[in-house]
Length: 590
Image (tube, rainbow, N blue to C red; front, side, top):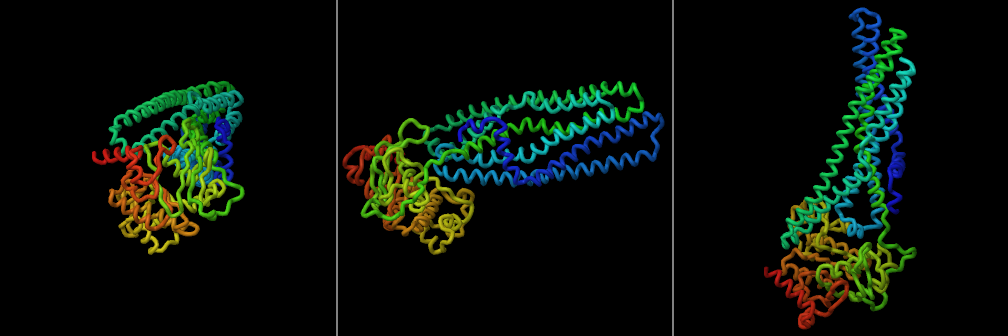
């Protein structure tokens, strides 16, 4: 979907109303309870006003027997109003929470075809902000917009008609003017949709900036960039503060106008009632009740005032949800899947003259890359940051389809195999693997829910992971070290690779900086264990001295292969690989 399809308020309201249909009964109950509660709020002032008018017209003192019925009536009205308020909130929020859950499920189903490549373009923090905070913001529509909107029509019309019956057409007209002003003032100096979107964008930028800084903390420290990142965050924060100050000024103007409306409106209605009093003093009870309508309906318009602030943010959040969900899939699944069987003695993985550019970027990430990963062998991709190493890993996993050339598994183009078949055969362990809040066994069984303890122990042994299976790892692995977290993720990846069609020997293992937090001895031992398993392995690494035993090393620069060979050959050639090796050794010495 294009951005234009999501612009404006009505498309967002219309889309939300489609979801609201699933909770029609709860929403109808909330609306009815709100209307009853607001009419009772009007009656709480009208009943005493009518009695005071009667006493004044009668010209006698208040009899003792007249007080109790008025007090009892007001108390009963207040109790029923409180019950109605409770039912309104209960039913409205029950509907809102169930509908928000439906929106999240709807969003997740539309993100799956875009994953995992969508995190590259959007950023994980922004996606989480939309899936969590933005969906939370649509609660204001389901719980606090539909019922107040209906009430805003029903209650003012009711009091206008009542004013006409009690005091005549002129007071009814005055009440109508005051009601229209109450409905219009919240939209005076209101927050525009553009302002709401700008504020939300700045908040998302803040969240993403903090998340990126924490994720890159090692680089930030190494290059003494903490002050620079802090200055960037300060600039974003100042922009956000300017937006919030503008919104605060508008809120102050609206609040002042609302207060003036009530008191000037009551004065206008009272003046409009003078002819009725002049005509007949007995009209006083009705006149007092008519004037009380201005004060009794304040609650109706207070909600509209709050909506003028929160609703634009909710509709802006709706637009972001729809735009995120409406993204095009990064790969197109074949209508007819190719059977996945090895084609002769072809390499397990092969890239043939691959050209690729990330969507929305000018420079090509890969240009004419060709390489082979024979079955049961291991190759390594090395190069400076941005050279294209991880891009090759993503293409092998089919996060994207290539612009030109082919990526093949067992002789078949991955585009013809389909993403499910590729995912079943390619198991990936990366530098920042995700760990769930549970035990070691819980994390391993993410890869295989039916795995026995013996199978879990085997995976841990292969990955040099030493903790017992019942050890809690904490939220995002907070109770274990970074190295242990990487080894746990590697164990999980091996367990998944073991379940590939044909078993471990038919899988492709991609290690994208998966051992970067290990000391050199442990890292070397882990790679030797993997080599002994005979699994086809693609290693992406910066620590080059650990690559002595891989079958072939490809050196990339600016999206092209500039060298390839075995470790000893590349060192002796004294080319780019030797330069990278010397540079990493210098950094390690420091």
